[in-house]
Amino acid sequence: MQETNITSHYGHMDNEDEYVEESPNAEAQKFYDMLAAANEPIYDGATESKLSVAIRLLGARTNWHIPKKCLDHFIKLLVDVSIFCCISLNLVDNYICIY
Image (cartoon, rainbow, N blue to C red; front, side, top):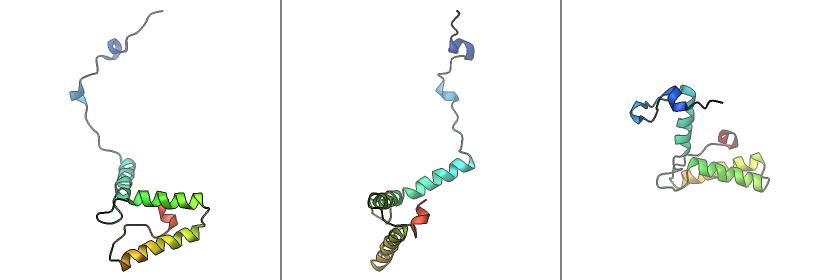
């Protein structure tokens, strides 16, 4: 049985200068843009991001079997209170938008 060395067959490939970064396709770029938007803070100076708030809300819904309408009510409450407090929250309007 003859062993074949991959580097002898395909050549030596440790030259990092030949690496060229490609830009992502449209679908991947859309996903990267969504991730970047979800990572934005919910307001200037906040430590929580849109994604972390959405995860916490969905976690609460799952842990305590909260109905969708109740979750929508609390999301609206957060948005309403943020307007009253002159804070612009970058949250979704309802549970459906989280998905």
